[in-house]
Image 1 (spheres, one colour):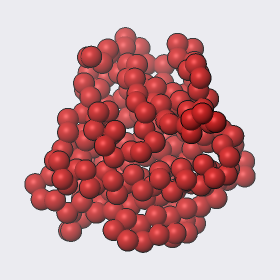
Image 2 (cartoon, rainbow, N blue to C red):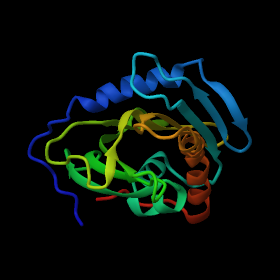
Image 3 (cartoon, rainbow, N blue to C red):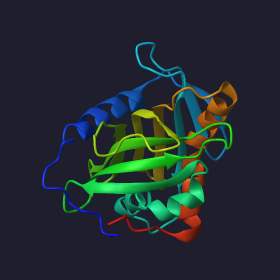
Length: 221
């Protein structure tokens, strides 16, 4: 289905807010390294003045496959179908509308798995935007928004994304990919919360593996 382009943008101020917070986390020295293999994973406690008890997580790995471009990598991260292959908690999404003809800024409804039959799945209504900062660095920034047209979905709990963002930067060795996430999934038991805090940053590694094996994908249009 073709993504409709809206005549107006009620969430125009959100990408700048999300990018500002993402860059603050990107520069933070408060992350604690919890795992280092092909993919490095860090965590840090959430600020006391922000809702939620899930740690802020960061995953980072290197794409060494030759012949890829910055845009191809960013577009691959915006392909809904391929995400099923590399994100174990992903259950689908609806792109509600776009706010530019290039479909760089969109409103999406994202669905995440629960733990049937005990724990309901989560949904997130998100402003997402691809921002190419330079020839060598780009971001995909996401944060939760409120929109009366898309309320909490039946049988699910509406979670809140303070920020979730991908950072892709060209280096001498390839492309460094970083995924930072500060999310409040709302009232999950500790065991599942800990699992999500591990799986979320690890998506950086599974994305890289999928991309290097299968090649790039086009962004949803």
